[in-house]
Length: 443
Image 1 (spheres, rainbow, N blue to C red):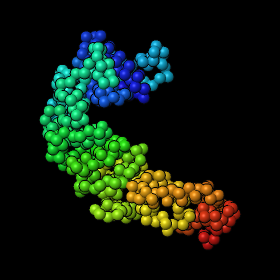
Image 2: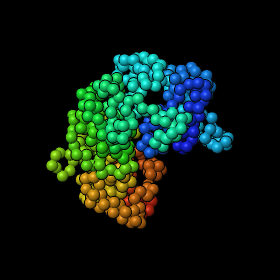
Image 3: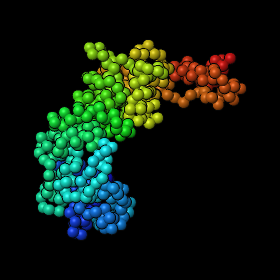
Image 4: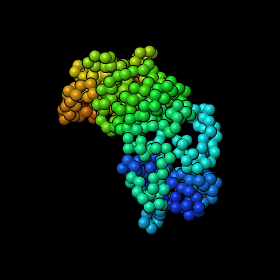
C-alpha cells in the first residue's frame, strides 16, 4: 500500500517501485484495490505492487524497507521523500510506503483466516487466489496505454473488468471455496457492494447465505472492524440491508435475525460515525412492524432486555470502553428526547443539549420524527439565547462547598446539582445565592 493524502505522490511512489523492480529484470504491476478504483474513475491514494521478485530480493533492492509479512511475501518499501516532489528535497513531506508482495498461490486455510502455506508463483495464480474479481486486476504502468485513471495496460485473468462494467461483486473461481478460506470475506463482499453501489453476483450471494453461520467463528475484533468501516460510510443503509438479506446480521450482532426497514439508519446524515449508526440500527431492530415508533432502549436496566442488547453488541463487535459508553449515552439520550422532552424543565433540557452525544441522538430522533427533531432544535436555539446560556460555568463547585465547611457526603452531589439547575433556570444569578442554596441542601 502507498498511503499518503496526495494521490499524485502516492502514484509517483508506486511507479518508482515498479520501475526499480523492472529495471532489475523483474515483473511488477499495480494490483488490487488501486486498479479497481482507478477503473471506476477514482483517484487512489493507496497502491499495492505485485512482483515476481522474492521478498529477500526486494529487501536487497530497497534497503529502506520492512519485511512485515515474511511468510506471505510482503515487504513495505519506504520511498525516498523526494520522489514525486518535482526534484525538491521533500524533507518535510509525508513518507510514501508501498507494499510490494510477491506473486503467490495459497495453500489450505485450516483456520478460515490465513493460508497454512504459500508458494511463490506467477501473476495468473496470484489473481486466482484473491477474493473477488474486481480486486484481482493488475495494471502494467510502464506499457503505453490507458486503464481508467492510470497510464498503462490492464491485465485481467479472472474477468474482473467485465464485472466492474456490470457493477457486480463476484468471487474468484468457486464462491464456496473462497468463503470457506476466510469467512470474513462475506462481510467484505457486502462492504464493497455498499460502498460502490454494486450488486452481489447470485452464485456468490447464495454461497454467503450457506456460510453465514460460520461467521460466528471469526474473531469478534475482525468482525467489529469490518462493520465499523461499513457503518462509517454514507452507504451504510445499503450495507446493513444486505447483511439482513444475506442472513449475516445474526452472526454479526450475535442476535436473532431481523428484516427491519432501517428507517432510522437511512435518515442519518452522511457524516454520522459508526457508533451512532450502531445505535440507530439497534433501534431499527426494536421497531415493531406497523408501529409508529421503535421500542426505545432503556439502558438503565442492568440485566436482560434492552440493556442486554448493549452488552451483547459490545462483546459482538469488540467495542472499546469509550465506544460502549458513547453507545450507552446515545441510546439513553434518544429515549429522553423522544419521550421526555416535552415534559422536561429548562435545566434538564439544557443538560441534555450539552451532553456529548446530543448531536448524535438528535440525528436519530430525526429518523423517527423530523418534526420532533426540528422542535427540539428550535427550543435549544432559544435556550442558548436566554441570557444564561446552555452550559455556563457553575457558580458553585465542590471546592467551594469544602471551603464553606461542608464535609463531602451523600448530599454533596445533590446540592451541587440543585445549585446548578437553579443557575440554568435563572433562579439564582450570583455565586453567593447559589452557595446559599447549596448549603441549605446540605443541612
